[in-house]
Amino acid sequence: MADKASGEKAGEKSFFARTAKNTTKRAKRAQEKVKRKLGKSDETKDEIFDRFVENFNKQQ
Image 1 (cartoon, helix red, strand yellow):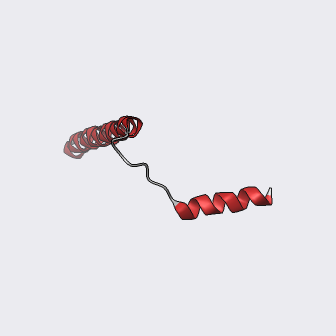
Image 2 (image 1 turned 90 degrees about the vertical axis):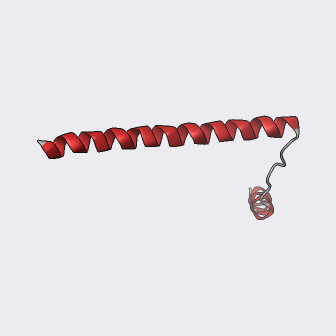
């Protein structure tokens, strides 16, 4: 019984840790989007990926 009680507490702790982690990720992404729209942050570009997309579209 003692194992079950400690297991539930560990499960709750990990749930709250995951929730906090996901909330932090969403907040950072939202902040980055706002900065991008205001022109305060550079948009990252993947030139190799863009080239692959162009080549793929040429093949269609």
